[in-house]
Image 1: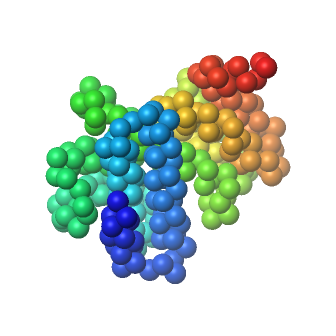
Image 2: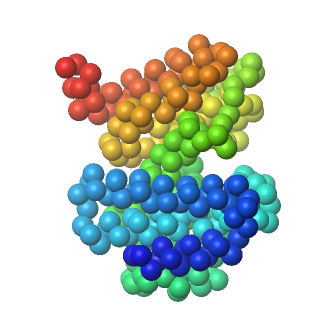
Length: 252
Ligand SMILES: [Fe+2]
């Protein structure tokens, strides 16, 4: 696996590391690798699956470096779908061949990377392994996105006084992810980040959100914290409902 990390590092070194956003994505990648490994451990997966989860996390955002370099945005709708583009870089342009990975895993890697950034996945289209690894990368990625928004100066967002859009509130209340297309203002975006929680697949991930209090950290300096606090409380109640041992901890 070490040589695969080196191969990835060499790839990133071909981009401009003086660009903060390039460095950010490089660091995001390794934090996502760590989260994917933690999820795999929490599920007691085999070494084979652990390694697969690691390599998928390492490669999941490979298209981000090109996206920032060519378009200066991470907004897929203003550039390209970075999950699809990642598959293109790896499997059409042949980047995957530089890595020490058995070809029998290519289909799983391809599927997980293509689907890591989609709003929803159609579980019936996937076999058991593809589904497992797609779920792991989707959780690991979201965990780091949530962490980053709550603690990274680079991504800090401040609430303003705009009204939260009705469609955004509806999605949140229905415990659904918010569609980016429904986001009209910065406060909508904050709710979108909260609602990422509703797409998490594994207890490890939910527990981490709860224990690290990412969302309370995110809102603590808002001038209108009272607007957002009920949403954060609702997320935490949701997690308590989903996870038995969190509930027990709270009762004891
Ligand atoms: Fe991504």
